[in-house]
Image (tube, rainbow, N blue to C red; front, side, top):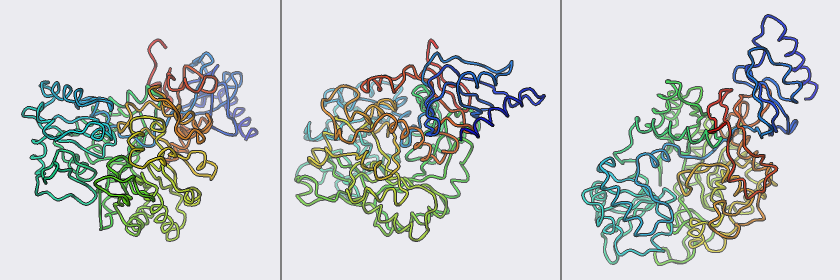
Length: 572
């Protein structure tokens, strides 16, 4: 590698003296602490960029001599330079809509604060007739019993429709008018994989809908348009670039969002690489997917920065008090579920295997929501069927939210080329962890086996899952939680399974190179190497030289996307 690098530098030096000076770099960044995420050359001091790509990496002297008179040269003053962050599980349009258009309150809000917030939104003429927002805590109704959640909202919602989601985005809370709009009545049966919570002693809906009962209605809300989605994307893009995030995988992408991405790409406004996980029907299903229809959609919306050969399937729900994730051992007993309830699967193993075989053959990377160890195990069984039938296609499956994993299943991730899609932003003592503990008991303290998976050779990718359960997509919060297992916000004491804490090198690789693998862009992104895109970030502090409990406060000074400076911190 060093010989090849030396020859490359020599060829550049000689070529700059010829009339074909196009080989001279457009931009040189030097006097930097460059962490490359390249094991052959972990650290460097300077990088040369030509036509948006990395042309050379090395020390100041060897790189600066490549400069031509018109090369832009930036002295980084010793600051850290690293690859851009890749968020492998995020809901950007949902988050942008929440910030721009919805009625928002914190996860910690109690009944009084929620009523005050809803009343203020009802009085705001810009909110329209639908008050959509949230997010209430997963354990809200256990901590704040309400005689009728529906009537609680009715008291402050006047003639408006109210639809509020919880922190997991899997459950909803509606007022009477919204229930009537969706024709949810005492005669409505619980949908497969969901539940309409009833008022005590009656069949009357109390306003709380769980899983499919909520999610499938949420997709019918008459408030999401392509134009709003475009505004949400541009708003979120600006935030992500300021955090140093330069590529994302949207965890579930609607047709409206695909249209918005396409329009922005055609206008030249996208400064992110975006992988879109095409959405599939949510909840119980007995018929296989129409893979040909997804192939047509994939081809229709693919573009240089919008990567559409990805798809999302849900196998279960969440391990909160709703008890909708599929577990191997029973949840703690409660009045509704009894003592032996382990949750439900959306799909049988054979149906999932049928879908995965067809999608794998068609070239799709599949992200599968598996929040319980039971769904993880069944999904790995289905993937094993796929590998036997198709061979190893080279495509990597992803198990999203696979935080509960049976010990016997840990080696199977590597053997089956399946990544664990983690949300380290949630790996610390917090209200949602408290809610999970209230449902699954003490095993909830053994959540997210990072080091066990890495020791077994598994690939871990990381995503914020924003806006579900986290206040922002800031990756430095997630990286700190990954290496400390403590609350990076400093609001809760203790650490969650600290024996599984990663080190800084592991954390950075998970958030950069592994994220690029999740987007199938590892040949272009994720490390600072010759030939890759110059998509990089400059930090105000060196992650390897600061206390680990200061990582969350990391500030990004500059973000480069394909050689273009797309974000500069004020004062830089």
